[in-house]
Amino acid sequence: MTDTAHAAMIDTADLNLDPYWMPFTHNRYFKQQRPANRMIASARGAYYTTVEGQQLFDGLSGLWCSGLGHGHPKIVEAVQRQVAEADYVPAFQLGSPATFRLADRIASLAPGSLDRVFFTNSGSEAVDTAMKMALGYHRLRGESSRTRFIGREKAYHGVGLGGVSVGGMVANRKMFAPLMVPGVDHLPHTHNPAEAGFSKGQPAWGAHLADELERIVALHDASTIAAVIVEPMQGSVGVVIPPVGYLQRLRDICSKHGILLIFDEVICGFGRMGDWFGAQAFGATPDLITFAKGVNNGTVPMGGVIADQKIYDTYMQGPEYAVELFHGYTYSGHPLAVAAAHATLDILVDEGIPQRFAEVGKRLEAGVHSLRGEPNVTDIRNFSAAAAFDLTPIEGKPGLRAIRLFEDALKRGFLIRFTGDTIALAPPAISTDDEIDALIEAMRASIRAVA
View 1 (cartoon, helix red, strand yellow):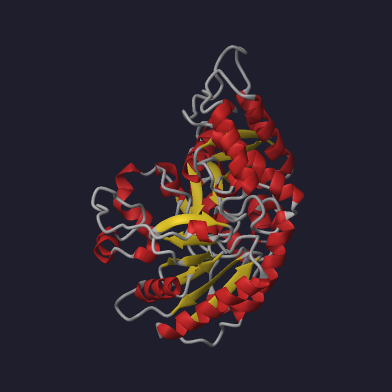
View 2: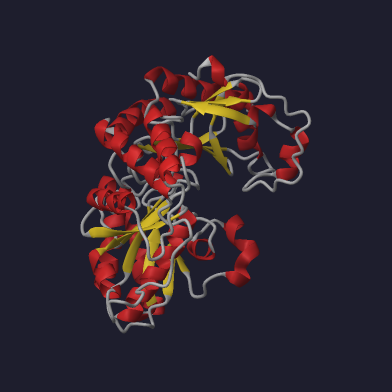
């Protein structure tokens, strides 16, 4: 747990909450409640400490990003050293050795011939970048009619206009329809409790749902489709695991029709799935991978795209002095983010963190499935160090039961994630067996408390 130096109380009585428009938050409810147990003062190891000194076990690794826990001394030291050496280096027409080395390290971990890395500042930017790369790739190959993207229902691909367009979460889409990318279609999601409820690991049912891509191709014609984008494991909607063979079937169909396949690995990448990427964990290789979060343990904003060699080579045309891709960000490959990423990769490799996530996942699986039969629990699913369970909605008030469970869990000292009436768990790799067991028993108590 955190040390006592990080547990000092902080007075927030005079704190003005009004100016801050909080993201993905019920602002009025939060500001009326002024919940002290949701005001974080510090973080250390697997715990947050609130302004009142309460310690919260971090049951979702921040927002899926702090898989090594908080305040890891190697990461802290790397960032402190870097800010003293060079706080900022432009990414346009300049570079730093550390950034080139980081790209090389990431490329060496990626599957297949995905060996060209483009840095962004977030997963949202990474998705929009990958979509641009896909469009340009086809255009440069003389197939400019390939402008259509295929996403999937219930998908979350960030909040950029491209990501919202290919995403499949209705609440994220409905207000912004006039700005969306035209021509996007969606595959069906694979979450079907009636056929694959209470699955441990990959469901045996559902691979056939990938064949819906053939129907979409027939409807629109392959010559109009640039790329298909899916999360290997759908995290934000509540840990939806791909059925056995499903992702490889998508891969085969895309290859057959000359369509690029994009894996959004913002949550899956860098160990969470028990391997370096979900692509390796689930046995299917895409043409583009988006990443963020775990690449530097959430320490400094960073994301990126890993592209197949053929995509990069297609862009490398024209005069050598000409810019090949008119795209980038002021903070692409920011020195502090790069320093944090190098330290993170050192830890991931030296301490075998992907394997550690798999071990945590075994304890998590046994625990979370022990909740079967508890009041209002309608489904449970898991893969490696990620799990979720669904709750029966309160009649006429969808989502309220999960909010109440979230709040009850906070009182017990556990931070988890809710979306709709689904509770998601993704503890850090440093979690002990006792901490996983305590997390599960807190969920059991909270489930009963909100019944």
